[in-house]
Amino acid sequence: MSKNGSNPNESDADKRVAGEAAPPRQRRARNPAVDDVIHTGEIAEPRSRIVRSSGDESNDYAEVTLGPSKSEPAAPRRSLRFLWLAGALVLGVAAGALSVVQAPVDRTPEIAALRSDGDEFVRTIDLEAKAARLRVDSIAATPRLVAAIETDQATIEDLFNDKREHLFVPVDGEVLEIFQLRNGTETPLFRIPVNAAEIAPISGTDARIEHAGDQLSVVVGAPIATQRGGIGGALALRHAIDLTAVRKRVAEHALAAKLVGIGAPIMLASSDRAGAGVDVPVASSREVKTGALQLAAVITPASTGGSLRLARDSCAVLAGLLVVVFGLSLVLKRR
Image 1 (cartoon, rainbow, N blue to C red):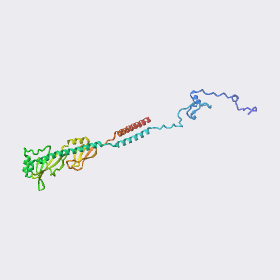
Image 2: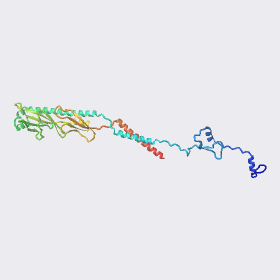
Image 3: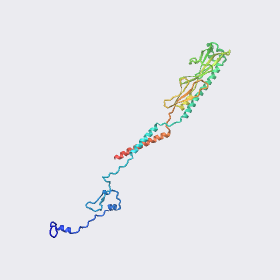
Image 4: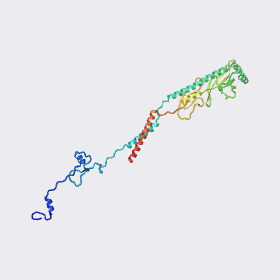
């Protein structure tokens, strides 16, 4: 350094710059798109994301980045697609449960109808038995039969074969058997028609039901008095029972039905369709001695109530829609 205090290494330019005042700093041009936002305080992004203009150390902001910051990822949106799937599963389970639930169905009208059919069956038997009894009683009281019952078999045959007497003419499959009573034993003498199946003896005025296959008959007896006032023999009349009307009625109320309690079951209606089995008690006949009668029937199965069907179908449809929506959401997400 020289005596006058100057540095010999300084150039004239450096001396000239040191002696002059620093020129004023030039401000950048105003940018309304940025400055208005800064001055009004409406910037929603963090201050750290505001970038200063390059080469300017002042506090004025050059530009603002409004996009999302890479260092701060946005929170993921919550998706409802799995709620749709869960709803579909719940509705599907509900539809399955409703499909197996049987609503209580009132079968009282059907049972009552079948009970009425059983009563009609018994009334038919009683009417046929009464008709057969009137017929056999009138034959047993014929004077010529009363006179001939203590004779031989040939006399009895001639009596019934005499076309002038017309003592008995079979109607609708009727069969008449004549028995002679001797020493406490009933012996069959004659049968009309002769080729018909024999009838087992029947005591006094009793009546019984016989059937072969689906053909039902009533057998009624009548004693034959002698001219001396005793019992010389008996008649047994087998009379076929017409069940056409009964079978028609039963078929209207049941898929299948059979009468139980008179030997082998008597079929009244038949069908290959499956259904619900019911047993309906039937009143006993007043004219014919029978055991406890019962109508074993198969009726249409109980179905699910209308309200449950509607609920089941609604659940199934909604479950299907939710599954479709779930699938569409997955497809759109991949795109």
